[in-house]
Image (tube, rainbow, N blue to C red; front, side, top):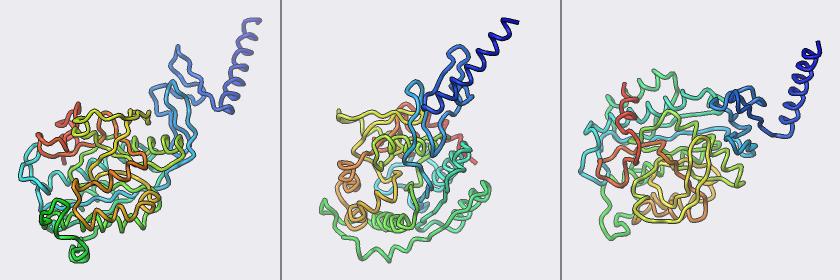
Length: 341
C-alpha cells in the first residue's frame, strides 16, 4: 500500500509541476522517453503553433508577438519566353511551360503538406504575359486538381510601357523582354497594395521543397517577434552569394538555419508594411533598368533584415552553369521529379 500511495503522490506532483511549467512558459523534456511533457508530444513532432509559439529545442519557446494573418502568393508567368537575358537552356532542357507548371505544383504541394497553414488565409494570383490559351488551361487544371481558387490577370504591357526609360543604367537599350518583365513587376506591386499581410512574389521557374511555405511562415513569425520588426525572406540559397567573403549574421528559424543577405533576385516574401514603407524604391525597379537590375532591393536590405535559408527551400531552375540559379548541396533531380504531373 505504501508503494501505491508513493506512486500516486509522484503522479500528482508531476501533474502539478507540469501545470506550473506551462504557466511559466517552460518546456520540460523527458530525456528517457523523448517526450515534451508540457505539450504531450515527442521531440521530433511539430512543437510550434502558428500564430502562438515557436519552439526549438533545446532553446525553448518564443512567444509569437507578430502572428501572420494572411499570405498572398503572386506568381509572374510568361511561358512564351524561355530566358529573360540568356540564350542558354535550363537544366533538363524542357519547354518553359514545364517549369511554370512545376513551380505552381510545388507551391500547392508545400501548402498542402502542413495542416497548420489552414489557420491563415492563403490566396493565389497569376499575372501572366503572353502565354497561350493552351498553357493557361494547363495552369487552370493544376489549381482545379488541388481544389484551390486563384485569380488570373492578363498583363497589359502598354499600361506601363511609357513609364519605362528605354535606355538602361549601362547606357544600353532596354529589351522588349525586360520591358514586359518590368511591367509585370509593376502590376505585382499594385496587386500587393490590396493585400492584408504577407506577400510572396514568385517567378515561374522556382521549384519549392515540401516544407518551404510552412518554414517561411513559422520563421517569419519567430524572427519578426524576436527583433520586433518586419523582415524579408528569400527562399533560395543562391550560389552567387558565396563568391564573396561577406560578413553575415546567423539566425535559428523553424527547422532551418538562416543567414543575413544583402542581395536577392526578384523572388522574395515580405509584408505589406515593408512594401508601403519602401513603395517608391520598389516602384523604381519598374521605371528604370538598374545595374544590377535588383539594385533597389539591395538598397532596402541595407536598412531592413533580409534572410535566406541554408540549405535552400526553393531552387531557381536556370542553366546549370549560372551562378544565379541552382542552389548548392540540394538534390535538384529529386525536387524536379517530386513536382511532375
